[in-house]
Length: 87
Image (cartoon, rainbow, N blue to C red):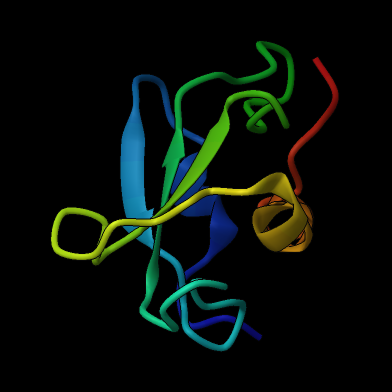
């Protein structure tokens, strides 16, 4: 079970959290990930898949390519962890 509940993402307004390292790490440098949720389903309060943004904590210090082939599996894991829904 993650240390931080994905429910932290289920709020009005944009919310940033550091993803628990047990869930996933940056596929490029291995650092922790930041998850931003900026869009929700009104009825359930759950984040949408398109409204979740995943980035690395080291983004400002280390240049990342963000190739889909490297990041898509990480995005899929984060969407599942956050119980993100289709729009």
